[in-house]
Amino acid sequence: VPGPFPKLSTATQTSPATEDYNCIAWAFFDNSQWWWPGQGFWPIDIDPGQSVLESFEELFAADGWVETSHGSLESGFIKIALYTHRGVVTHAARQLPTGEWTSKLGKSVDIAHTLGELDGPMYGTVHKIYKRPT
Amino acid sequence: MDGVSIARHSFADYTRDYNHITTIAAPAHYISSHGDYITAFYQFLHKWVSETTFESNLDTITSHGAYRAIVAMGPRAVPLIVDELKIKPSLLVYAMEDITGERPYAPNMQGNIRAMSDHWVLWAEREDDFIAA
Image (tube, rainbow over the protein chains, first blue to last red):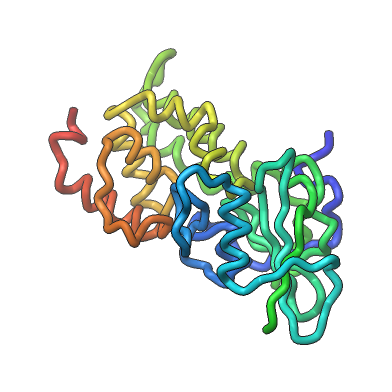
């Protein structure tokens, strides 16, 4: 039976499980809060009627991130991949200086992984990749 | 980094922290019965935890059927949730809000699950009447 991450093979666990923070927080270098528009921590105001995806796009723009076409390592830039499944935001992963990616898996652990390894029924696929100067 | 392959982990691995709940809920002389709300609470909790382990989306997490079942238990679930929050910070803080209609922490603490959990434990110490209801 395929699990939630059928492509996961080389990833390594890098932290214990905790509900202190989630993938979005971790992507933005915060390991103390659960980031989610509405019920969780959100660093900017949310416009009434705004969708979750619009809230994320606004957050990236407000924090100086711009969309990029690829997830390859670029000197002088840091990258975040935003995942969606059937149009719903599910996950974010941050690129490490090694070119690997780091993810907090919901309430579970942090892992280091390749970009495509989290594709599947749980998180869907990468919707957009954003970059910002380091 | 301990080099452990994530692929070898199962849902059970990620939920094993909750194995203690059987011990807490059922001391040696306690005989559970069908319809017992304590047994039901821990069954719902285990289902919710295991089926939302990898979720970040709070809308999805708090609309899960087992979460809604815990909330539907009302005040009877409150002392059981507080017991969980005393053990470790948990997204059960949102069930406390949904059941009691209260929010015993400052607005700027929203999303700080550890601080929210701590404040709910303090709230429970103040609200003995609610807990005993």
